Image (cartoon, rainbow over the protein chains, first blue to last red):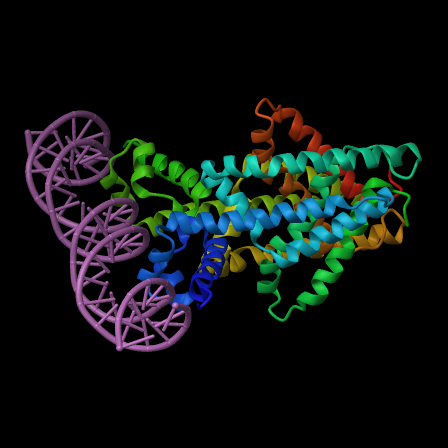
Amino acid sequence: MKDNKKQKRILEVAEEEFLMKGFSGARTVEIAERAGVSHSMLHYYYKTKEQLFEHVMSEKLQRLKESVATVFMIEDIPAVELVVELVVRHFEFLRENPDLPRFIINEMIMRPEYAEMMKREALPILKDAVARLQRKLDAAAKEGEVRTMEATTLLMDIVSVNLFSFIVAPILSSVKPDMDFQAYYHARCQENVQLILNRINPDIK
Amino acid sequence: MKDNKKQKRILEVAEEEFLMKGFSGARTVEIAERAGVSHSMLHYYYKTKEQLFEHVMSEKLQRLKESVATVFMIEDIPAVELVVELVVRHFEFLRENPDLPRFIINEMIMRPEYAEMMKREALPILKDAVARLQRKLDAAAKEGEVRTMEATTLLMDIVSVNLFSFIVAPILSSVKPDMDFQAYYHARCQENVQLILNRINPDIK
DNA sequence: GCTTTCGTAAACAATTTTGTTAAACAAAAA
DNA sequence: TTTTTGTTTAACAAAATTGTTTACGAAAGC
């Protein structure tokens, strides 16, 4: 048995193509070509472009869900440290999946049927996560460790600053072609932690 | 003379379609249909889909440039107030052009030839803007009004929190279909101003 | 060795999308 | 009034993209 190497390879390339170009921009012949298989093989394994897309999509959603779930599993840690952990882990997740958010947002807007699917999949996990964080924050606010604030707002702040660091990266690199990404991401993560710390408690540091 | 009403209408609809679905996702027949003109008319005015796209693109870039330019023209205003003004104006611009950023980022990634064009168009203006802001910040830092910081970093923070407020809006509305957008945007703008103020000077307010 | 599975090449059918053309007509401009 | 311009319809050509089929080869497993 050859362990379906080619089939996997198709999926890998499809992932890259769909993430970069979206469903409508990606081409099955190009995916096959880049995967080093014949065009017919692609349709042999994945009947249609649509089905290939669904494979990619569900795999990506899975990863996203896992990532959210694990971060919010952390218990027994002070609120402030939890928040720092949140920022850093989210940043790292993005580093490993830099254009996943853009892809998901785009496909949610362009193809409402997928928006529905994503809501079904992701919302329960997210709601639970927000509730957990809110409890932590409220408790810490009582102790005067942080200011009172909505967990939703805080999460939006975290996601937005982190996400943006990645969204602009390609633009920055085109402006400065010799840019040191290692250094950029390191600095950016620190900056974001600082920003969020200032946000939950202006007196920290 | 009929003032080219139809021609304009095509452009309007094309703008909506391209912004929502991107170049590869938009369909010329659908644009024509929605614009209430025959398919042949579309090709009569704009030889190809590509050319139609270019019209939309350059018009959008123009607006973006104007917007950046006017904000940074403000003189004789304390640094802190300038920053607040920056946040609010940028927020308002986004409110009028909510899916422009997604569109531009997508097309820059999917079609490198446009990335080049945008760099040529937007970069000089942006560099000038950053330089102006940096001078203001440095002066204010000397007076102890704000902490020392990079104008680039500050701008990235502003853009990221504002942008994100709009990126998540459709998602939030699908979660809460009865959501009050008026209130949401109002609150979000305030939040963002606060966040940025904390950022440039943790002691303010 | 024989069969099944994985794979290719190449042609081609089907569909979708883009782009063109011609005939006709109304209304504005000359 | 004549010409030009804007416009429609309808058909069709061209191109791009997706999906299918067939015939055939190599090699893995029995």
